[in-house]
Structure formats: C-alpha cells, structure tokens
Length: 151
Image (cartoon, rainbow, N blue to C red; front, side, top):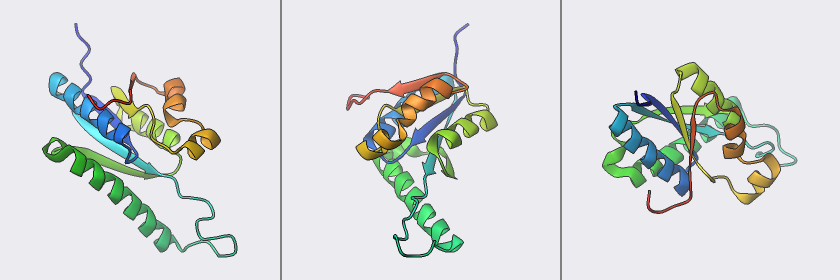
C-alpha cells in the first residue's frame, strides 16, 4: 500500500520559498487526490505603535493583521495563477510555529509542507527558524522544500 496524503497543510509567509512549497503541495495533492490548505500566521509586532505611544485599538490591530494576511495571500495567488484555484486558506494571529502545530492537530493533517527559509535574517537569529522548530515538533510528516526555482 502506498501512502497518499489526503489533507496537506502549507505554511506560507509571502516568501518565494513558501510559493515553491505550495507548488509542491499542489503537485502532491493532484497525485494523491488530496486537498491543500494554506495557513498564514501573522505575528503582531510588539511595540509597533512606537516607544512612547499607546497600544493600538483592537480594531486597528485587527485591520493591520487582516491587511498583512491579505497581502501574503494575494501575492501567493498571483504567483500561482490558475494553480491557486481551490486552495483553502486559514489565517491566524500569533506565533507561527504554535499556530501551525495547532492547525495540524485540529485539521488532522496528513502532511505539512513548508519552505526551508522565509523569515528575514533578524527574525531567524532572534526567534529561530520556524522550519527548524516544526521539524522537531510536527505531529505529522513534514516536507521541507529547498530553495529552488525548479520546483
């Protein structure tokens, strides 16, 4: 019997690597007859209102987060073109690793797909790589797509 993932989750962050990961997931879904869900997680930046300012209103924060997620998903859809048809999207707020792990459990994901790199250098140094943390904690098989233009 051959393993065929039916529920595939792809973590996307707007990077070229996450577009490549989504393409790989879509190819696998076509082969296995599965479905692909993309998840984007926006981490609200601490202190984004400035050192001397007050925290934003819940409405302002929600608006900023929604705009960030829309931008990520719009870029993904633009890069994928017709391939993006039928993608399900999940939008979360918080720590990317925690949100992706929770989605894997909640949705009973068969395969998690992510790009090898995505975050900027400063975030990787300060917070560690999301890919690295998922490699140690994923509750399902994890496919880390390398940096390549041939995917």
